[in-house]
Length: 125
Image 1 (cartoon, rainbow, N blue to C red):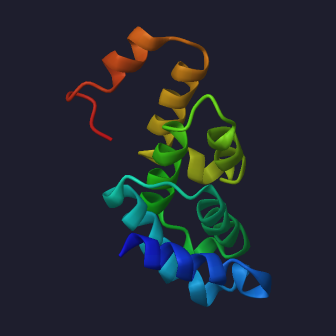
Image 2 (image 1 turned 90 degrees about the vertical axis):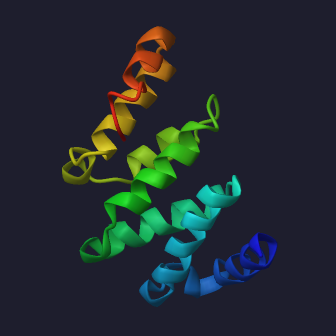
């Protein structure tokens, strides 16, 4: 199922339809599928964030949080920084986005003990 969805999204991301807001629901479902299937597609995730930039009324905090968490798992690559830079300041202050950005900062600065303490069950995301 995931491979079929990946192929469909791949076609969707080619050309002008990439930033068509009518495709946002499909791309958001694809983000959820990535989380469930332990998969990762940076290009599709960046397209979602770009659509949120173009259409702020459609912004979804939970989808953005999933994108950030997937990018965080791809450290030390720059995916997390790329995604972070595509989120406006107001949305960066929302919970759980703020928490995820803080966790990313801890990892990027090699504060691993603090990272694990912050991700304990007492600190839900």
